[in-house]
Image (tube, rainbow, N blue to C red; front, side, top):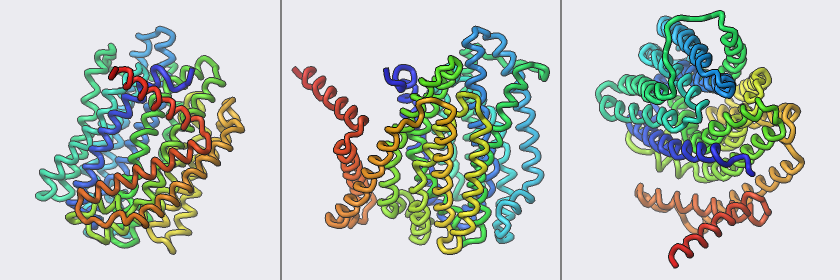
Length: 523
């Protein structure tokens, strides 16, 4: 039986549905933000102000959830429900105290943080960034608690309610920008970010109560497994903080470039995150509890098969996504963003960043899946070290490429570093887990690359000869972008079929069975 079946398949399906909702609302959020604020100094100030709280948010979301799932699963597997509740009651209290302290320090030292992150900001832009930093730092408290709740619920194979975090946060920002953006500017958007963080934590509380979880006062620092959690948490936290250094490096270096460079990188990155959030996060989140169970049973062969299958799936999905983002970059940016304050200059800057980000999409997807392979065997040190190496690669390339390519050089440095990190993770995880990188994976990689090259070339030719993208209206442009994307995906699928990839054959088998079922139903 295939690894991605049963509970994992159902969980992945639920997560994909909610991720579609999340990414659609995220896209609407970015469209609304771009229309209201464009690629301006105020938007640059907002992004720098949100840099540290958001980096810490992703740090806690990844690190806490990653540690909670395997440890909590071990307790449940042993039938030690009461002990699990006691342990994570203590962990909740310790985490809350830490988050409150970190928030207070962030608000107090906001001027220093802004100066460190954007040393070349003009005085008025820096002053706005300081104020926004103080407004948004409390977001960290609610996002950190939300990460803990998500881990506890996912360990129980409860995924739907945790996937509501993204849509709720996006809707809060959309409402804030529409209702307060014209009156208060980016300050109104900051309030929306904070409201979204609160909603993401609160919405999980009823589900958490239904599992029997109760919050208890007190901190039992002598609990034996509390030390185990922190021992696992520390390297993961360092690893995630190192990987999120990409954002800080980009914004530090881009603060000295043309006005709007930070905003352009952000808008382009939002488009890159669409396929990652829709498919990769769903697959990685759904498979992680199963991987931890395989590791607990010492089934390294099954564990390797699970990681390999998941890696193949995300590569097959992300390669055509990268091709479409690369080839249709100008059309996508114009369609989604170019209106209101987002002018032609902002569109051109964003399209340049999107071009270079597209090359690293597969690397980012691979990193996410492979990291869960390491974490499932409670190896947190190796991903941390490899992330540090990738950051050094990113920093060196950023300093080299920023001169000739400006903000596009920062995006290209990110892409090369992500691909390098994925390759290093494959090498070291393959040494730890049997059956991860079989010889057939080289042939698989070569065929996928060839299919991508064929798709890119034919799509370019079809667009030029057919005269696509001559329309100026938004609806006509959307139809033409959709048509071009459909053509590109069809070419890619046909190329995979000709190259005899097993996944392509499985796809056509499913289509055939669906058609036969439909014909029988009509009869």
